Image (tube, rainbow, N blue to C red; front, side, top):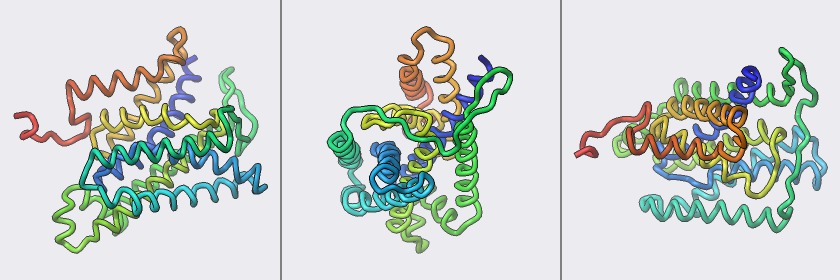
Amino acid sequence: MFLSILIKGLVSGGMYAVLAVGFSLVFGVAKILNLAHTAFYMTTAFLILFGTTIIGLKLSLAAIFAIIVTGLLGIVCYKLCFDRVKVHETAVMIISVAIAMLLEEIFLLIYGEQFRIMKAFIPGFIEIGGVRVLYQQLFALGVSFVTLICVGVLLAKTKLGQAIRAINQDSEIANLMGIDVSRISLLILGISAVLAGIAAVAIVPIVMVHPLMWTDPLVVVLSSVVLGGLGSIRGSVVAAFVLGFAETWVVFVVPSGSFLKGAVSLTVMVGVLLVRPEGLFGVTFEEERL
């Protein structure tokens, strides 16, 4: 059981971490609470399905096509929707939910409510200590870790990363220093959508594809960002793995745990907001405690 929890916890945590990093980047740079983030994850899954079944593309080509289209969708959503009202946080949240529900309804109309299974990129399995481990699980784990490393390198070693970190710390000062905050925010929405697409490519062959598949990851991503600290990339990654293992443990150990795993993330999120609102790695603002 321990090995099963370890493997599935790492796979789930890796997917949640990639999603949480994208969500955290958008919030930290563009100051947008994009609740449609996991809807981009769902969109990639259905685009892969469309590419393989309707267009007849190979699975790898369909995945690349889906990620590119999802990235462009993120840019379009920012330009047409978020950029106009980004100073109004409530309006941004409402619009993001509307986008997610619109995408959900589109896929419901096209594909219906049926659950679909996608082919694995790497079929087959190996047995480790009597536990069957899918090659697709190892592939998903590898994709997640490589993606997180690439994001880390981007933020630490490139000029774009320096601009992102500067805006994250103080957007007004960054703007005065000549950094085009609006342009960087546009790029971040695209990068965030691409990260959601990569998470889908890694994990979708292991789970079911359906038009409501964006809701459960959204709860975990929000909980990860709150637990790690709003705007903290490192905190989001750590929290995502913590919640991934917590959910997996509940599924394996608690009777009917698969129905309770969502409650784990919600409980953690509410508890952190009540006890330590800044999260594990967030910044404490003393004026907010007065």
